[in-house]
Figure 1 (cartoon, one colour):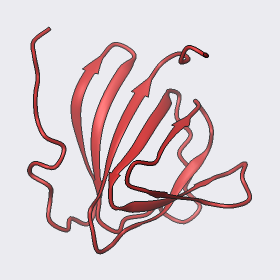
Figure 2 (cartoon, helix red, strand yellow; figure 1 turned 30 degrees about the vertical axis):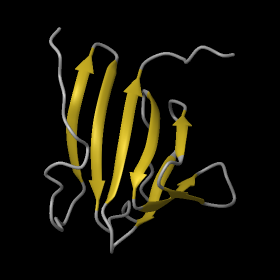
Figure 3 (tube, rainbow, N blue to C red; figure 1 turned 90 degrees about the vertical axis):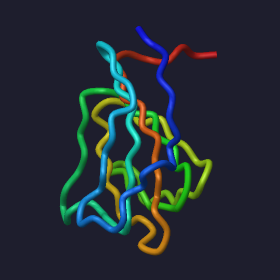
Length: 115
């Protein structure tokens, strides 16, 4: 393994039609990504249903996530994070169209240790 360094805000894309996902690090059972959204949302009636758990944080910008098993959407701003268990169906209702929403996403197998 070698030392890696970078900056989450370096080389932010302009206004692409799709979200831009950049892999920052990966190992068996683990993937760390920077996701940049510029007003994107999940397609109508689309739900993510992932095999891995996902810890996600909004680093800048804002977003609205909806979970299939919750009545109200969750509004996220810079600093907010969520742990999404495997197969918890969710979707992105909206991201900020005026300011890039930069996410840090950690996808992993297994469970986190409980306190």
